Length: 100
Image 1: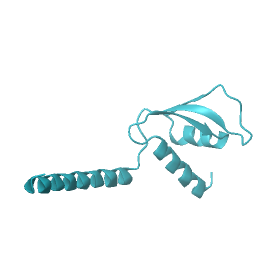
Image 2: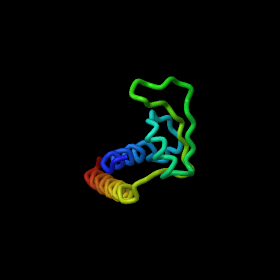
Image 3: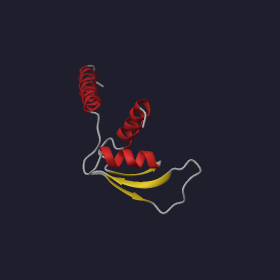
Image 4: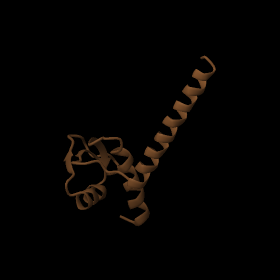
């Protein structure tokens, strides 16, 4: 796979397996299946009983022992969630102060 295509595919996998998702059905090319098997050897891939599409892709059930995550992106999301929670608490207190 060419570098730009690898980056886009990694982003697709990261989004597909975010938020605690460990199992998913994905439509993959033979090249993508080979990449997954090479880079994520602990992932299990099982070809679904469907016919190959005209673009050469088939449906696969993919299971991960642990989620694929972008640690930097995950940390940013967690920090944003914390900031939002703090802002909500401040708003609740200010509403309580004015008697609402």
